[in-house]
Image 1 (cartoon, rainbow, N blue to C red):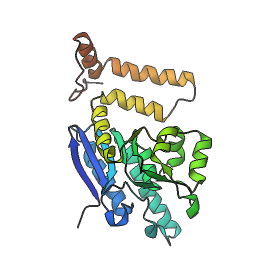
Image 2: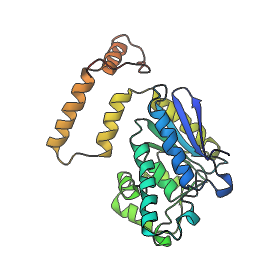
Image 3: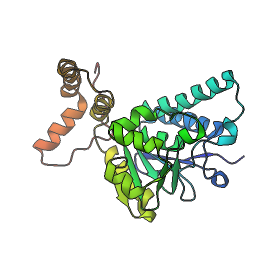
Length: 264
C-alpha cells in the first residue's frame, strides 16, 4: 500500500514531510493525519533533525480536508474527528523543530491551518490559498482563528475567512500571510534552503523564543519574568558557550551537536 505521507531528508539536519495523494490533490483524510502524527513522533527523538519542511507531491500542497470523509458524521464521530485533527496540530506545534511550509499550487482549508502552525511560509505566483469553511457551513479549524491572527490583523483575518476569492501568492506575501515570495518552480527549493538556515540556529534558544512569540505575555511584568527564566537558562547553557567562543574567535558558531550541560 502506497504511503500517503512521504518522509525524506532533502538536506543535512532537515526532514521533509509531503502529502502523497495526487489523485485527490493531496486532500487530507484520516490516513494523512495519522501519517503526520506517526512521522512527527518518530522525528521527536532524532537529534540529527533540527528543521522540517512541509509540502505535497505533484506541485500541489493540499486541497484541504477530504470532504466526503466529513459528511454524514454523528456527534461522536465529529468529536472523534476533531480530536484527531487536534492531535496533528499539537504534534506540529510541539515538535520542537523549525517548520517551513512550501505552498505550491492549491492550498485550502485544513492545509492552510497546517502551514500556519509552522514558522515560515513560502509561496509563488500560482499559489492559491483558500478559506472555504463558511461556504460549507463550518468554522475555520486546525487552530486557524488563533494562528491567522498572529500574522494579520482582525480586519484582514475577517476578510480572508469570509471572502470566496482565493488569496494569490503575491497578496499573501504582501499582507504577511506568507514570508517569502519566489518563482513557482523555486518554492520547494527555497523552503529547503530556509529550513537549512534555521537548522543552524541554537535549538534551545530558538525554542524559547518561539514559545514567547506564539504565546505573548499579558503584561510587561509577566514578560520580564519569562525573560529572566529563559535568559538565565541560556546564559548558563552550552549554546551560549559555543556562541561566545565563536564570537571571541571571530568564527561562525556551530550549534549542531551542542550537548546540553548537566542539570540544565
